Length: 301
Ligand SMILES: NC(=O)C1=CN([C@@H]2O[C@H](COP(=O)(O)OP(=O)(O)OC[C@H]3O[C@@H](n4cnc5c(N)ncnc54)[C@H](OP(=O)(O)O)[C@@H]3O)[C@@H](O)[C@H]2O)C=CC1
Ligand SMILES: Nc1nc(=O)c2c([nH]1)NC[C@@H]1CN(c3ccc(C(=O)N[C@@H](CCC(=O)O)C(=O)O)cc3)C=[N+]21
Ligand SMILES: [Mg+2]
Image (cartoon, rainbow, N blue to C red; front, side, top):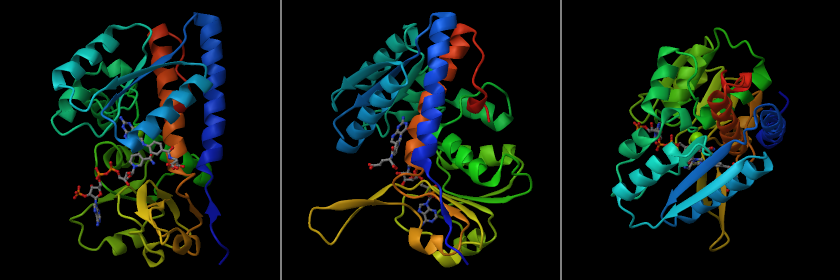
């Protein structure tokens, strides 16, 4: 069989960001509104600093206002909650993203609950998670699952009815909302996790396989159904033969998957860039709702 198609998430994300930038411009022209995204980083974790910088750059490239807020690693939970309250009250801020993970002395659930659900561009607030689960329109959809669904539809078409989907991972930020989206799209959805008995066998049934685990190359080629579409969310930094040098690998053994699947996302260049593009889309959508302007259809899949 021929090798699988490599799903170019980087290219798709560039296109999405260009569509967002156009709509930002018309929102300015027609409603006099410039969307604004505030990113809050607590502490100096180098990986988080890299993400936060690329989010700020993407925000400006989309013509939106970017607000950067840094708190020291020792900041108290109260200081973070006060900052979130100020951002909730600031009309120039349409989106608030509190970069995760937070230092251990801060209660993540409490911080996320403090964000105004209308400004929760991550879609992590229980109001948005609940709306997604209950099928209530107007929810903000978490960026990574939304981006994954866009890539699946780009390959398989919009109609996913009756497809068997397996999501590996059940976190609130990736696995669970991913499963909800696929269910809403009429797939037959299974969720696997660390207590799943025979994960390879579950994988072999799946037409759509989404791996969001955080285990380098866990998913092997012989776990994959021939012709399946494989979405690799994993971002694992592993050491190489060269001392001090690291590289990024996904949760899927990419070369093996390419021999069996019909399409596979690479790491990097797959899901990661889609997460950022969907964050831009969600920020635009929040600004549209605040201004009473039509919400882009792509934000409500
Ligand atoms: N590209 C992007 O934009 C993003 C990438 N990521 C990446 O995606 C991955 C997952 O992230 P996240 O959901 O936050 O991670 P979590 O650690 O919160 O969740 C991991 C999930 O995988 C399950 N799991 C762990 N080990 C196994 C195993 N051996 N077999 C089966 N299931 C297992 C866990 O099961 P249990 O619940 O039983 O513990 C858990 O449900 C990470 O690599 C992360 O870096 C995350 C966000 C965005
Ligand atoms: N509140 C919050 N929201 C998040 O959405 C959030 C978060 N916290 N904490 C961390 C994770 C991780 N995450 C990524 C975003 C972009 C890439 C990305 O752009 N990756 C590129 C480049 C990777 C590289 O080269 O380092 C790629 O995969 O091609 C990856 C991962 C968002 N997260
Ligand atoms: Mg996200």
